[in-house]
Image (tube, rainbow, N blue to C red; front, side, top):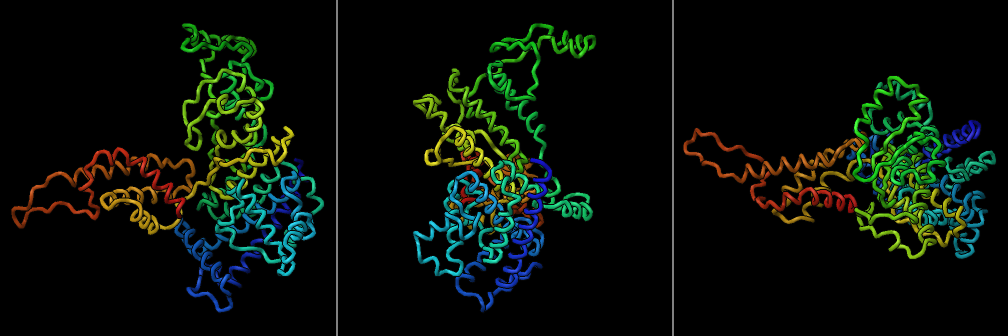
Length: 550
């Protein structure tokens, strides 16, 4: 994409952001009496009707949860909610433009209320014309609900960022920005959504952050100041020599990736060793001596021995981008996985040795698919559900990454001439936002009281609260936070305390004798070794259940 086109995307993105943020500021302050400085009166104004009072209650709760998750002031929590509402709205409308361009949804926003999809919708429900906006909001939200089945991370209307909706005039101005004829050619390009992500925060904002502080002061600044669109050649070089190299060695060089991966580092004379076969004795020493005396060209012609790498079922080859952004690496890796899966059918694959990405057992591919055609049809789904994983501390990135991968799968099916109605449904992706546990600690305590026997509650509450506290760092540390180590340390601490409390103590004989140390946490009754052996597994299960419930 040339610089002029990128500049047009940048201009449109900044204009749409300013438009939506101004609209939502006016709604928060003017309608719901929620001030940007964090002032929120306890009682809603008398001007609010019953539906608006419900929305206000949810807005106040959402801001309260953001405040509890690490924002130091109420004003910061309000600003965070404002940003989330604005970028989620923009991402959804940009997504609709991209889906229109691919024929995955009927025309819905390119001509506003004159769009063919909306006219058909109104034909099914003529009474919509009585609504103030003729039912256009209802139509767009029904599209969000339908698309949420496929890309929940972006289109889920139960998310708190969906509580605000732009008024009619703002929607018209937003559509005018996105429907600018100068942008007509960008919506069919896969990388457009990545550039929208890149340009949402402008350079002036980054410059101001750097002037105010030498280091990022919170998770948002960390995300904004370290947001870079990785050059394509870097993406290809790193992916070719990790994922590409793994499959190249598994197949002992008999793969089309040799031609497809243009940055794959190979030597002219590579000797693949058999299982258990060592390199010739003294090879390492002779190679070191050769490097001192031979030229670079002569060294390249020297034989190199490649240790045996066992072949795997392709569903067990997993790529993780721990700071995925818009999933630039994952989109390129998708191309390599298409080749890997295509070749895997004709190889003598071993039975899968582990469960799938969602924990389910894996059947051998030939048992799962009676015909090769059925297998080839399902490959894009398999790649997203099993192979590609991403983590980011920015919710915008997670929304866009989820959409990008889903669109890439749709393109693969389109190129294979698979009708949209015949495409397998992608039921899970592995893109996650690193963030603190939801809600406040009081909610966690209520959960523990509801879920666990009385004898176990003190220990599990202690362990879960320890993890809960450490998870407050997730928004800054992301995948660097080794929460599994924190859990094991907490279990060891609680276990030692239980053992100490259960040990017999000598009673006080005289008034001056020292009293035994007291602690508010009584674990003396937990002497069952099985409880401690299962504690780590139960903590993971409890945290998952708590997060889903909250």
